[in-house]
Length: 246
Ligand code: PEP
Image (tube, rainbow, N blue to C red):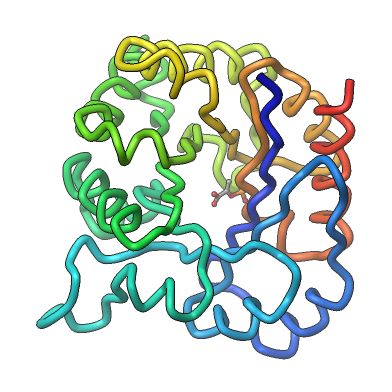
């Protein structure tokens, strides 16, 4: 089954209204790839007026109430979001998000019609200890107990040691983990597994995007630093589209 690649920019806590306006004027959409942007939440409405798909960088697991500072899936839907990233390694590290909480956030997103982008990935110490598959399986486990949520989700493999470091997993190492993720899905439901979009994230740049996206189980990219400049983001979108065309 042909899967349209998704290239998603995660601006994290970067950018301002002016730089976003300039970015939106320069970013391109191309046939053969979907482009999505996750700016800081206060700029989501501004980004939603562009032709890009829009995602939040996080979503609450709760529907509403006494959760100061959090945003519900329904609110994000109201403002025009299509996606919500859940379980980014920075949220897992700095906000102590557990695998169970991340799955609950994914479920809250799906309940309101948002597509969760469910991030998994190992640290360098875990990779060196030969624990990659064990860590990924543990991170996926609570999601795989929720058939409707896993069916709706995108999974992003982001090795923690590759995020913002300039180090990228080799395309064959990344492919190996992506294939493992699809196998974990297939053990629950082969049809859902075949249609699953699995993004790679970790220092994706214009010069490595084509090789990564050409791998059979890599269906696009989650891009941090290189998404801040429209020129490099455009080149990654074009590389993803070109790789899916071969
Ligand atoms: C990310 O934050 O999801 C990411 C992959 O960042 P970078 O591309 O900068 O490594």
